[in-house]
Length: 122
Image (cartoon, rainbow, N blue to C red; front, side, top):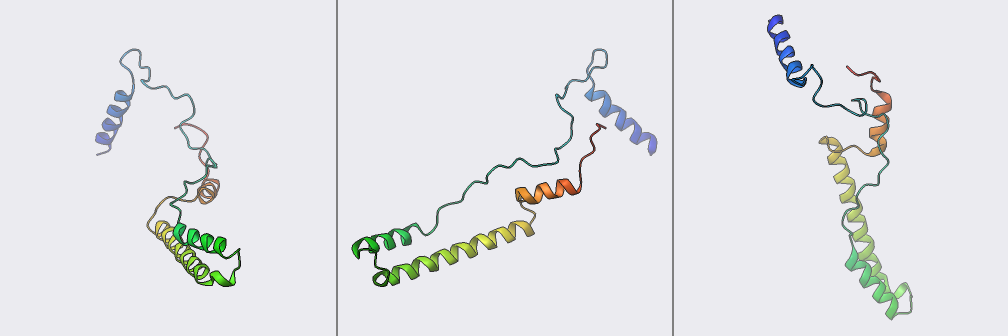
């Protein structure tokens, strides 16, 4: 069994080597290891929510010379929409973390710092 595993390994190595003089087919320019930090890129924003409620509220303010008391119904509907959108975003984030979705950049960097990569190639 051990001999069979050794021949499989040898076949894989010979496939990775070139045909002339045993040179590798691919030459990596950098070491084949992940970096410890994750690039600090901004995540893509989702769709804008509550646009119609916000535009109705602003139209009401404009008609009533920006008096809040006259636009209380529009303000309440806007705030209710915002609360629903925030709850939906929170649920989406919790579900993605439970189901093994993408990690947040800070979480990924913390994990990579906790378990750093070996700096030597295998």
